[in-house]
Structures are given as C-alpha cells and as structure tokens.
Length: 222
Ligand code: DX5
Ligand code: ZN
Image (cartoon, rainbow, N blue to C red; front, top):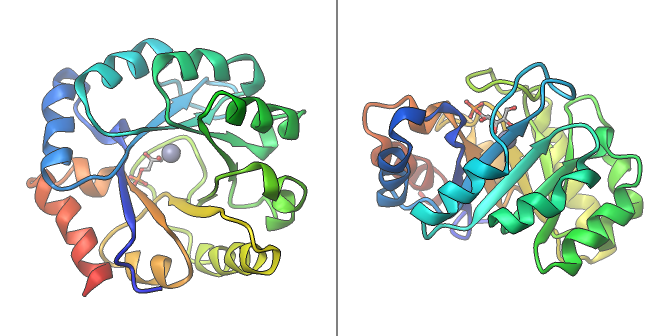
C-alpha cells in the first residue's frame, strides 16, 4: 500500500457550526475526498449531535460525498431518513444493531455504501458474517462520542487484522479509520491497510484548514 489512493474524510464534528458552509469550503479547498458526519443520540454514546435535517442541509452546500457515521441505538429505524437526506455512505455500529445483516442489505439496496463500525473493544470477528454485505469497515481508533481524543495505538494492529481478513476472503471492502488521526500517525494507519482516514480536530481546529488536509495527504504519499 503506497498511500496514493488514500481518501481523506474531514469530520465536521470539530468544525465551527456557526460557519459550517465556510468550514466545508475550506476542507474542499484542501482536497477533501469525503465529508464525515457524526450522528450521536445521547444513548449509544454520551453526546448528541446532528440528525437528518443537518445532513440534508450539508448535502445542499457541498459537492463531496457524505459519509454518515451513525452512533445511535436502533440504527435500523433511522437509516432511511439519512439516505433520503443525501448520505452516500452509512456506517452502523455492530454493538448497536440487533439485525446487522438485514440493515446492511437494506442500505445497499438503496444504492448507498454500507459499513460496519467497530468500537475499540469490539473484536474484528464481528465482521466475519457480514463481510460480503459491506463496502467498508470502520475501525474506531478512539471511543466514539467526542472529537479531539488521543489515538489508541493498538488500533494499528486491528487495522492489519481487518486487512488480512479482507485479503483472505477476497472481498472488495475498504477500511476506514476514525479517531485521533494526525500527521504523526497517519503513515502507520495507511501502512497497516487503511483506505479512508477521518480527521476532525486535526483539520478543523487548525489555523490553516486546507493546509491541514493537504498535510495528511503529503505524509502518506511522500
Ligand atoms: C468520534 C467521531 C469522530 C470524530 C473524530 O466519536 O466518530 O469522527 O469527529 O475526531 P478527531 O479526529 O478529533 O478524533
Ligand atoms: Zn466518526
């Protein structure tokens, strides 16, 4: 893996929501490939963020595909609302969904990319029986709920494990990594097998937002 095909997904969780359109334009200017939107319900995670209404508003102001990360209980009840709002990718936490297989199939039937997200303590084995039903696996490298947390180092080994499973099963599944991504660790993350990296605070808390997106790409393509 050279890193040249890596996709960068800034997470607007750390953006200034009072100037969301400007912030997204800056991420686009830096060459962002996707926009990562974190949906939290105050149940699955101890924080509340945005719903379909904001996803729909963001869809109107960007040309970037929307990568919607559902950190909510009963995601099966809400996937359609997010698809209608404009989601291009939807990730569902394995820990939050009783009928994971059925829900992933339903997402894909609507022409939306389906992903399974794994908390840091959730074993890679949770992917085994849905690997043919997904387009990407989201490896959480922090505990979901907040931006600005430190990357959990064991995540690098976990990414490798997921990559091995994908190669062994010969499936077309991408690996997305979310949490604590910076220029200090992105090389290791991509080297372990990541295709998509999410970066929230590193991008939106930077003085130079476009420069922060570019610096992530530079580190992995150097
Ligand atoms: C955390 C979210 C992340 C968050 C990442 O629960 O899923 O997408 O925005 O933020 P950073 O990059 O600051 O860890
Ligand atoms: Zn996320």
